[in-house]
Length: 368
Image (tube, rainbow, N blue to C red; front, top):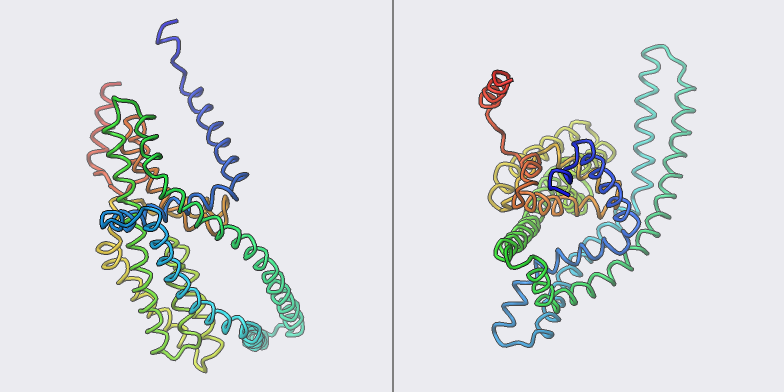
């Protein structure tokens, strides 16, 4: 059988690609309880790897170096978690009061509008009462879902440290496996790709941590200056949500605007909060992200939003946080494999010249 007999038509390649993609997504969804903690562990292990290597170079036993690195990381996360939990508890206790105040304010405004437009206010009042009951029911259901999520999260939190330790300990075996799997002809190429993936993940996540700290400080300072209640928890939550491209920023500004509307006497505070967050977002986009989040991988806005929504549909909230690092790795792999380079270009943000594209199409029309 000749090589030409093995070539598939275009529709055959598309069919195989779609079947493979559906099978992959099904596996990722079904096995998410195993894959999610493993992916988190791999990413965290890549970030912690330089610290472990440093301790090993100063003659500390490898196992002890891994334990010390993980212990230090746990202490930092625990301290941050304690502050966040204390603020979140205070905010959670006040949530029913905020809902009641917001509903009363909405009730009054809609009733005034009904009088102005000569509408029956009773129907609107009935609808508001029904909506308020639904909000309370949703909040109660959300608490139950949160308890379930916390239970699942506890299992994941127990698995991740175990995975991190094993990945860091068996790192030489993993790297040797990748080297042998790649074959002698591609070892240097694969080694360069693995090195770039490590560099991208380390720079991306360390940059995100620094960005989150700066954003939390600016958000909290702005809310404190405006006198908005729960400034610390709202500022920290906004910084964490900012990790989710585009969508997170919208949710982050909506919460303090709602709190300002309910707790402040003047509705102008809503616009003050919006203006403050807009200025902070400009600082983030023009100064913090380009100079601090020093990732070599640039993903265009279209696929950033698509991958965040797909990550949420596939893995929920963890998927939203993991979507961008995984997409950066996929783009890096596409950029290094010749048949996949068009896909890497599609994911990137390098905009080609319109005039150049027009010339190419004109030449194609002439040749035809």
